[in-house]
Image (cartoon, rainbow, N blue to C red):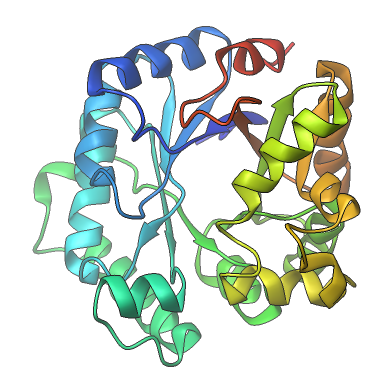
Length: 296
């Protein structure tokens, strides 16, 4: 599979199912190679991906990410292979350990040793994909690539050695360079970059902070990663410092945002998927931003 250089990532739960199909068709028509959909508390990603795959022709659908605590490895494998089969290999399986608050409070699982759990889970998922007695109807279909949500060295190394690569989220280009140095030249790095097509600093940063408050300092994985990149406690106070907001969310003109996207590529990204946030804060993708940032 050629994942391409540019994609779109978005929570599409603020749209009806037909609206998500129309948006996927628009993303495809504009020349993006992939549409990434997450798993949190909204739609189940696999039937939604199947629906969107049937409404498009060449667009790759990717989970960014499917939560490994939500289904056992055999079920994850079966879902991914089914999507690969029905779409002529237009599906990427992104999986991740999620975060303790989401796993323990919402799902009731024990979040201890997430790396060890992922390592074992990945091995079982890959084994299920290659089990000769199962899924005979899809053996002629190429197995879907597997990416791991990874921020820190051990998970990045696992992504490089036991999967196709990594899907990184809520990171500046400095992290992309760090990830590339850690995993070598061949593994995929598929980076999510939040964007706001808005040149007014006050408006853009207000929208950016509304987005960022979900992640920092509420979710320790992201906060720790940013601390390791040099950000201080003061940067997480009062909705985050302007400098941190600007590092995480690319805002401004289309050309200014493109510069940030290309900074990730220059740092070693294989693929950058934009999160086209709206300046007014509404929970649907910015159509204007999607169009303005389309591949040239």
